[in-house]
Length: 294
Image 1 (tube, rainbow, N blue to C red):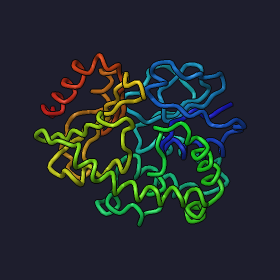
Image 2: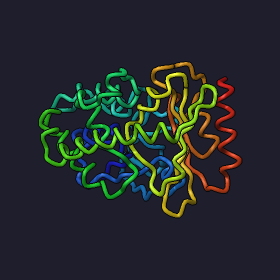
Image 3: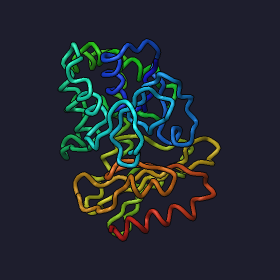
């Protein structure tokens, strides 16, 4: 039995809860949503999938993404909730020996982007927010760190977790990286009416940083589109779309929209990935839908 989940804070916390609730003995299988959608993940009988699209081989499935809803019967739980961790937490409400209510509540805030301007601009003042920013699914070589966080959060409160040498190091690096990311966002983002478009295709490796920062830099926008290449051969394009968390006037259901372009997600945020040959077809259509804002 394995936990199969994605490498973001919600996925890490799902793994924490599932390790405590079920007799999981194998390491986490980390995967991205597009890998699941395209059948690239070796799902085994007995696996528990969380925070990812459903696969018929799994024994349990937990999710909260609008675009991942299914009509068939399955074991587990699906709800349109602030986080997948919330779905897992409520499913196993009377099982946990430790109190994970604070961890789950903070995951709700982070995954649903229910953050204040100060939390976005100064994450170093907010323990869970900063910790969440040390996790990025872009680099598979970070798997030992993701696994380390699962182990730490299973047994310790946030103060002790932040004192771990590797966590402390990555938190410091995150603060420095966010300063650089702020500059790069300003240089590579254009405003098209109420849509901000961040184009990182110029980079061999797309910059990473505070995913909420763009909303503070372009307060007149209601939605952001970020474009980057997924790999070194530059044959796969990734388009991420997110409603502004400070100017909540975007009417487009992002997950539903991106499901038409080989992706998916929530009402307020999602992503799609596709071969570069489809860029001239897909990208203008996505931006046009957002400009119409219907």
